[in-house]
Image (cartoon, rainbow, N blue to C red; front, side):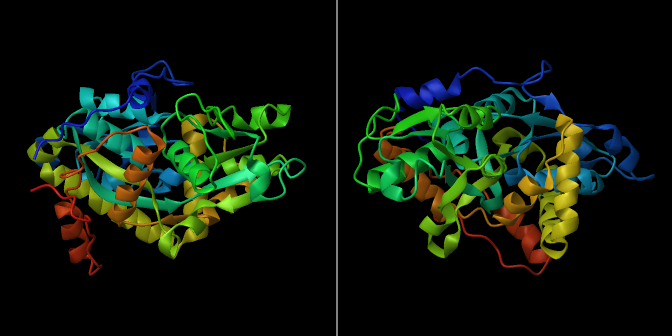
Length: 368
């Protein structure tokens, strides 16, 4: 049934926020593609007759599945003679825009921009087709100013962006403490300061914020600056599991090129299996890809604790996405989202079954 939600101004603003710190090419910076051509095996055939499949992801450790998949060549191997090309993004709205325009076909993205993109298009632009990561989000604070939860009241706490996944989680947590904050302005019993992750460490160092509710590796970067972890968001969820990264695809691409989508999902499952079996080597591979994409690797005192706090999973943890959407509604950032059909796990479950793994559940939000 087509979705016809009415979104509040905050999410509309989110969709047109300027793209911060993006490279000049397209919607995001190009990842290194030279290795892709080298990895195409002799005699390999193109999948679905495609010359290329365009894959997007963020330069964040919470997108470690994609980082490892690119670095270890899993995507290119699965796609055969069809070239895997990549774009790296810094913001969810820009990746959704790229998916809508056809600049990418498949992407790794957080739950809030996926929800926003789906509802704004009345359920016509994307599907969530797989999981990638859980956890890796923390409330880190200046220990000289904040020694307990009650000390957060009256302080300035950063989140990455108005209406993004961490912003919604923090606003929900604030409400659970009985405090009041205007969601759009961020003003109230706590000052919610929307700050790009790239500059959050500088803001903390200068004293303009007292802490931040942020994903990895930003949380560990702040700890390296002297901050302390006050709360790990995983502790707020049943079984300490909640979706932080999913895999999305253009509905048109899914309908027209299911074999290519299945190949990318197969590569994703292989990447997660490698991460599980070889965590240290996978961490090194992810960091090497970050360095290749951005020119800078993470130091060990940031990389090690950040990687340890993330759980990589093929399961999209659909029930937690429903809860996150409810949190956005309660915060006043989203109104009556219609999420029926946001998932299509058919190809993921085909891949998982072939690997002898348990299949994933769509929490009743699957496409018909």
